[in-house]
Length: 120
Image (tube, rainbow, N blue to C red; front, side):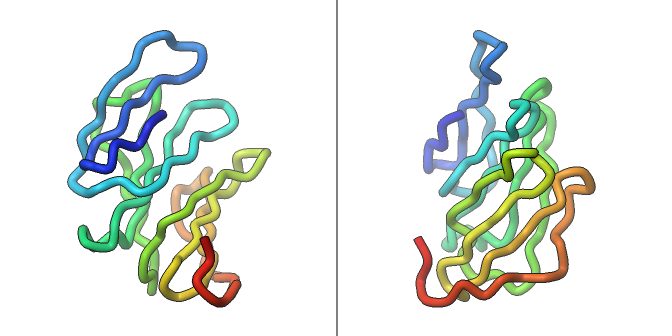
């Protein structure tokens, strides 16, 4: 998976030798792949009102992505997936909060973790 910054990302699961280019309606900032390579999670840029995370099914990369809107987010720029794949963690550079997504339900967990400052 490669974020291209221009609103597109190249997606190819490790078991699949092909690569697809996915066009999103936002500039991409960061990408994380689930441990089983079934999903790609993509954060967007502030200039594109990047208050959400796009989720792409890597088996169907040209299908419309699922969008998870984060509540009270400023700039979700960093993203990581837990080793068991059950949670996605998104760092908000403006509010200093860590947002959590339940990857089974594809929704935000209500609790945010204050990590302060301008996390990178």
